[in-house]
Amino acid sequence: MNPNLDCQPVHQWALHHLSNADLHCHSRVSDGTLQPEELAARAKANGVELWALTDHDEVGGQQRALEAAQALGLAYLTGVEISVSFAGRVVHIVGLGFDHHNEALIQGLRATRGGREPRAREMAAGLAAVGIPGAFEGALQYVGNPELISRTHFARFLVEAGHCSDISEVFRRFLTEGKPGYVEHRWAGLGDAVRWLREAGGMAVIAHPARYGFTPTEEYALFTEFIAHGGRGVEVVTGSHTAAEAAKYTETALEFGLLASRGSDFHSPDESRIDLGRLDALSGRLQPIWLELADRVHPPQ
Ligand code: AMP
Ligand code: MN
Ligand code: MN
Ligand code: MN
Image (cartoon, rainbow, N blue to C red; front, side, top):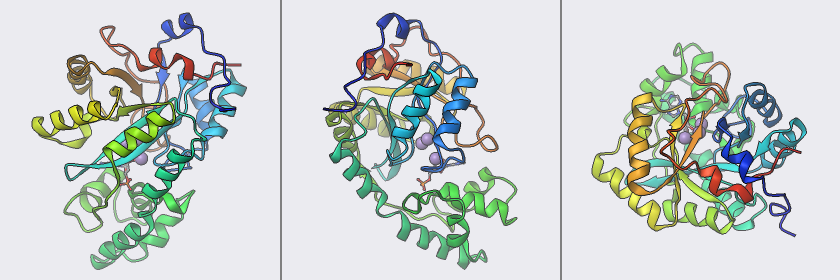
């Protein structure tokens, strides 16, 4: 039996009356600092009514997150955040409500993760060349799963070793395009990521669109190609958007007929600007994505 389809659909009434959905955050399974169980407890304590853990390129924390949510009486949607290369940039696609045992999705994510270690070694070489030795080993100290070594882990090391005073300074000086620790990488294709999610029974969502720095033409291409591949949603209210950006992408969602998602993108109590569940509401003009995912929600037990 498909283990993701054996749950009772949440009553539509309950979903219609739900306001605090938080469908984007990270655990130690990728680049967060808390365990899935700690995040579930924090979400519950902060009043989240529907939660999804969306680790980067990995669904290995899903069963733990689901069980922890159920033990707390918290409704749960499976989640993931897939790194995709598009128009020379990295775009993040959040997946929601898929079967986390789907083999093709698991294999696709494994292939996406595959290049991270050699990339991290190249990043460390770039940093060593500007007088910061030992960054690969240093970053590894913060990594839960070495396959998922990311820029975030390097940033934590550089702060801890006293090279920068905070994470955003590290990104600004060392880890963004043109800076010594930045290494371009070929991630998944947009069409592949959307297909893996759809074929696993879930929906694809463009994560934090304001973060990419696309021109209007590039952004139009991203949204039209995403929809052509069968993508359904866009994050409007996220910890990565200002209120003005949320207002802008409210209009974009309506213009493109996309469902709206909401998520803090919480990584760590010490680093994240917005805590789990502490987000503005979606505009009442938008169609929340969770209403369309009713039969994929694991209801509170
Ligand atoms: P990677 O997948 O290794 O390229 O790392 C990307 C991760 O770095 C994102 O998921 C964020 O958690 C983090 N990140 C990217 N840009 C910034 C930034 N400007 N400040 C803080 N964290 C960032
Ligand atoms: Mn991250
Ligand atoms: Mn992201
Ligand atoms: Mn994220």
